[in-house]
Amino acid sequence: MPADAPPVDALRFSGIAKIFGGVKALDDVSFTVGAGEVHCLAGENGCGKSTLIKIVTGVYQPEPGARMQIFGQDYAQISPTQARKAGIAVIWQDLALFAEMTVAENIAFETMLGNRPRGVSYSRLRTAAASALARLDVDLDLDARLGDLPIAQRQIVAIARALVSDARLIFMDEPTASLTQSETDALLSVVRTLSARGVAVVFVSHRLAEVLEISSRVTVLRDGKLVGVYPTEGMTQSRLTELMTGSSFAQDVMARDPTGSDVLRVDDLSRAGEYEGVSFTLRGGEVLGLTGLIGAGRTELCHTLFGMTPADRGRISLNGRELNLSSNRDAVAEGIAYVSEDRLALGLIQPQSISDNTVLAVLRRITGGVGLLSGQKQEATVAHWMAELAVKIGKPADAVSTLSGGNQQRVVLAKWLATQPKVLLLDCPTVGVDVGARAGIFRIVRQLAEKGLAILLVSDEVPEVYMNADRVLHMAGGRIVAEWDPRRTGLSEMEAAVYA
Ligand SMILES: Nc1ncnc2c1ncn2[C@@H]1O[C@H](COP(=O)(O)OP(=O)(O)OP(=O)(O)O)[C@@H](O)[C@H]1O
Ligand SMILES: [Mg+2]
Image 1 (cartoon, rainbow, N blue to C red):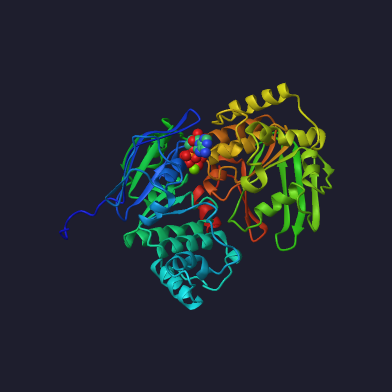
Image 2 (cartoon, helix red, strand yellow):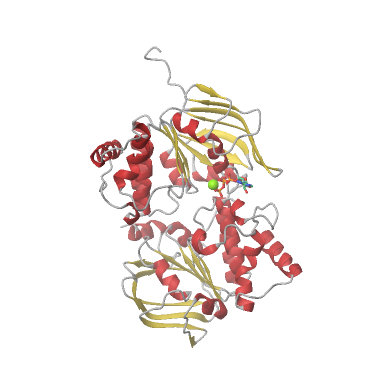
């Protein structure tokens, strides 16, 4: 090939369709990624992004008629092994790493073992791992046990492992969903390094600022169809939102003075190593924002308010009465609901149906967990909340695991709202939720507040609390360090304080 010939594209797919039980998850989609390009896939929850990634990586087979080319070579069918051999790697959300092995082993073991079935020395593994990390401009302790590392560093390990196996195209499906701001910055810089070294990256994120910052082009899907492919230069978040959703979501600061009386009162609450001297009052009809970096103690505080871990000191009162919560069942019985940031661990029972998940918390509240709801009542409850929250589902009897991430999050919300709580603790309720759905969730939050619910809105995305809360508390190092009124303190001032 002459030196000035254009490099072949990493990926040229067209005519991609995928049908799940009659539902068209993808419909005649084309998808092209240039060599060494950072390309984003954008679209609302359930539009088909993860499905497209699974087709490209051989996990799912597309419907007949697909044309698939990887680095210039045509494929009639792609298996996961073929995809890997062709230079494609995926950083799955669970990362598929081994907690008990070291960083070096995780990075280099599989690949090197494949080459030399009689085993490899640890020093050779270390050398290979070190060189992969060096290519990423990252420094990690090669001998650390993987299970001891934070999620952000494990991701880097998964990316380094892809490099050891000569990946030239790496897919990352919502890699930043559970990262702090500084971890996100570090990951974006790794993505830039990859791209500069000729490795293409396909990146999925619901944080549009990130999408515009990192990619050179973005492919937009809506309802399984291709909307278009756009250069990100000159693209704005509001334009991208419009392309994704077909409408625009202009938002104003929602803060106003709540009129209800004090519902939840927290006095000098402390728990060693987690939070210290926390006091605040939450009124009926109020949306109180709580922001701060991951690790500031926000989730730990929520766990105590939900009865999961006791405080060492201090008081929690509800409507003037001191609470003595010894389990989350107590909290639910008192009318406290908790939408957790970790829907996989705490929110949903994945193999069970959408319907059963939705009424789960109602059952616990009414019957202490052993009773039954009449089939008719369950059906009505489920239908009501699926419509209210616009959850995109097939049948209520489908397993909740078949839903896209954002739709799962809505089921978690439905499950708690169905208990008709007095206090709603929302812990990062929009992680993995698309921009249209976020607007929908915050509209519901506001309506619930207007009905008198007391809402604690926890988020590490400062704009979320700035836009949607009446008051904002800033938590850092386990303490409340500031209180802001969004009508008086600007977004940039809040962000500067939180990310300082
Ligand atoms: N294994 C499956 N069985 C049945 N339906 C599925 C399956 N996988 C995906 N779907 C459906 O296909 C559609 C596309 O889902 P997909 O996970 O690709 O969405 P997504 O764009 O990744 O959404 P999110 O942003 O929420 O992650 C959804 O309607 C989903 O419910
Ligand atoms: Mg997805």
